[in-house]
Length: 172
Image 1 (cartoon, rainbow, N blue to C red):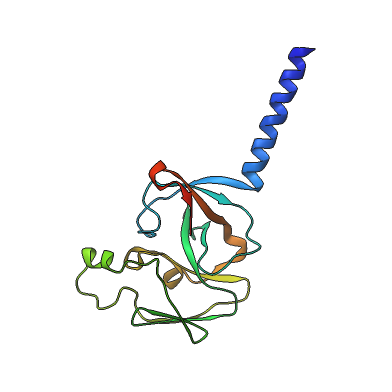
Image 2: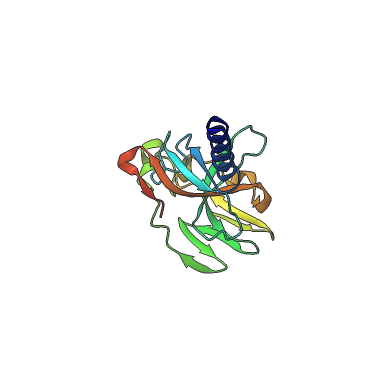
């Protein structure tokens, strides 16, 4: 009887852990350099699966179109907004926003023939969609190229760096 009780508790514990991972929080792996300097290649994060309250500048994970993998990018535009980039200045519905998380000097290491870190563009964000950009704009496949991402494609919001330990902590 004791053995059966222990097995039942172990099965219950495993079911709770699996349910938490499936529906609440899950680990993810950063692959690539598109989110430098905020996120680095092979960094491990925890992502919450709730996408009901996405806010501007959240870092989200979504299904990459036509690929069997996920992308991780920053939310720039919310549903119904107009996004405009002019000479590396971000405007949303005509209001200028600072992007303190960017480090344009990264692009100068990669290319010297560009005058701006982010090429100029204007984009309308449809309802139930988000405009997403990588922080390393010269090395990111994002909404500039694949279009706005529908809410149903979002997997979750990256919240905490768990590896490497020297970067452990909440994403800002």
